[in-house]
Length: 484
View 1 (cartoon, rainbow, N blue to C red):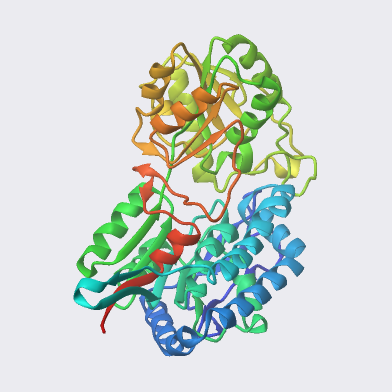
View 2 (view 1 turned 180 degrees about the vertical axis):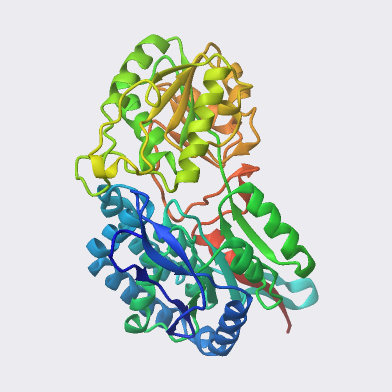
């Protein structure tokens, strides 16, 4: 506890009411000081949320898409009016820079509600005329009912709203669990729901840990659908618990994403973008962690190291800071352990951890900060080239031929995203098609169109999210046959 400062105490949100909890979990700021208490909810809270959602479902599901659209737009407007307050909370809670929270997390959360509010009006149904038997067949899509949403700690409000917005737009009820490490902005959003016109019970937030509240939510027989963003081991547990109930699952998991830089790449654009894709959000995002460079290796490497050293690590509230603090002491130690393992394998650390000096004010030196780190002379079989580190660490290696780099890029168990840099249109299309990745950015990074699918291949997940994909996931499709 930080001196005598009172801790912020969050409350669970069930049936439109904030309710106290019998026990709480401490949440820490980027400097390692407890500043917030998060409800340690469990099975009883999940049961209460299911009851509230069950009662609210008929009324919300019976509203027209146009009526639900108006509520979502009002909620988006209220979030936008609270942008600065939300950004400051997200930065303090997660450790990301205030600049990133202002520019990305909160605006993208607002956009989630606006986009899915309008997209719900533009879905079409299928229809088939069967004249030879005198029948007309068509499809209708109806709400599933209660959806369990479990979100990650790296983009707290954005990932949560990315699930909530399409789910309630389709007429469903929400029981959501944000990460116990980053719950504040979810709690703040709950304060806006009544004013936006969201009826009690439509959105319920049960804060707490995965083993207590997450497992209770996944296993509850009246929650037929689970949307999860997080780690592969947790996804395996979700699959086990949900199997007896045959639940619909959407699992967005990790990645070991490659950047492939061909010799004809425009380095003036490639280098700064690849630095961002490697170290944005402290590396706690599904970003570039393996960089393959063709023939221009020396020139790229020189520029990349120089640009990385310009990437300022600092206090999250400091406007010039490019990178803030990692999420926790445990995670910081995990990320550092990968660097030590790489060093033990004979790899070289060119900049960052153990090479350069991190300068922070004395009061902040106990925080979870580390420098962006670049590893080279590393084998493809190394754990740093195979496993998701989820921190500000990237590996840079050379390659010679196109087919070679495709095989190396595809050699890991993950397949979330990739980037390709080349001025040759043939390279771009050919390589993009052969990469085992759900998303491929070429000559850019993190440009998103919410109409299109988002999701990974292999161990990076099951299912896709986006306008049509989210609508299909959050509804049941039935075929109606009419004899005439």
